[in-house]
Image 1 (cartoon, rainbow, N blue to C red):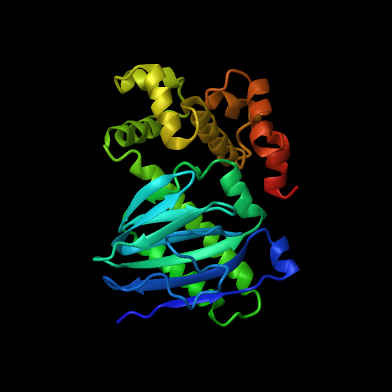
Image 2 (cartoon, rainbow, N blue to C red):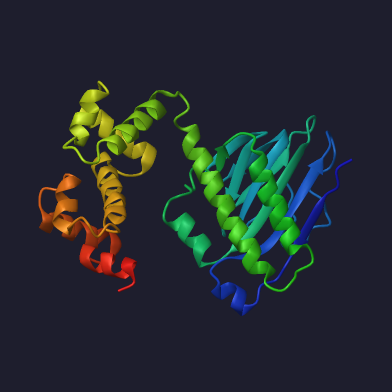
Length: 294
């Protein structure tokens, strides 16, 4: 039989300055018709379904077996089949529990800090959508287990190690949730084909309108789908590819900066220099000198 494990830890002022720190983490294995939650949790975390609770931290819970139900004031009542991720923010009233005749296995971690605030305040996680259906992922379970192991004996620097894993975990969750929104395959195929066309035609005059035409799709729809999938407009994506290629070419002293600009399809050396500095913080000449160690 699987064993429950949970631990609540404190954070020093130095830990808080790091930007993200762990408050608690654990795993729970509830059999069908078994009472929930475990009364062994601290009073500030324990709750009943009738009253729910409000935490002073962010908490992420992953359902890996069984099923449950979740409710919050912002997100309403949501089912929690296996493969669900639930997140709550400080001050958010919520409650959750396993379905009686199914039970569940879950992992969770609680954390706080400026980095956590930024993730939620910048809208990466929407209060109206506190339940994310991302499916079963062995890697996500492994990350929860790494966090639990990092805090188990509290070695020196464990907060920093565990907080790094949490950031990795949140990035993993976000990426898998984004992927779920494009599961029909058509959009993925369009974007992947477009990326190949951009990459293969860095040195030609091919532009995003040409790519849309090549793919047999109207430009407005192409731009919308590409930006939804990648987070940037196709023209911006193409510029970023060209800047990356320019960095490689600047390592070759045989090519002048002007030759590089025109070889990558930039309309002028001045335009190339301006864009390069916007993207990298230095102009092409300085980048070449710094890369050469001059």
